[in-house]
Length: 193
Image (tube, rainbow, N blue to C red; front, side, top):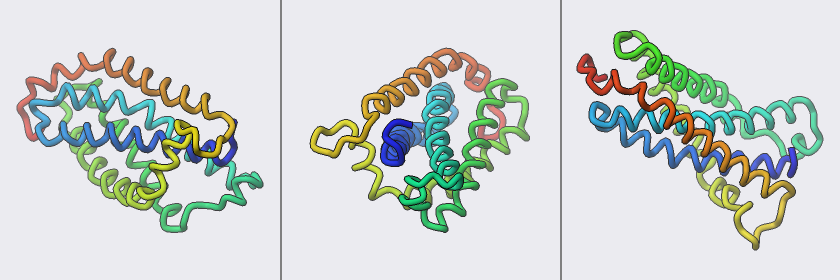
């Protein structure tokens, strides 16, 4: 990856900021899910490519560190509590998105799947909330570093900006292509649906 460990850190931070913004919007839809179910599905699908990018960049760091790459070893691992929390964040993230996509596919008749989606969200919210709090002070400066001229340049800045734009475009295409599948949920009146 161009830019090495510093470039990876910047891309991870920038994708994290994008996720926080989109997840805040998704959170607003939960407050009035019956009226905003189409927006919930749209934003949820929009989130998939940026989430995949974030999982990819953090996975890359994990692999490079534990494979013994000098630059990543010198940078060091995240604090032990964050390393212990990471598998839960990843598993809960995958569960929330997998159950959400499955609900779009099968429709509102599957109460068990809806329960799994809600339960995985609760676990995800707690684990990811701790993760975000741990990085909230460092991330903003890293996230905008490739966009500011006064910040030290790291190889691959243009490529990282392009990747961020590409995942947003891919997410928008996915969201537009799939939002129509929210229609059965618009008229669903069972449970909290």
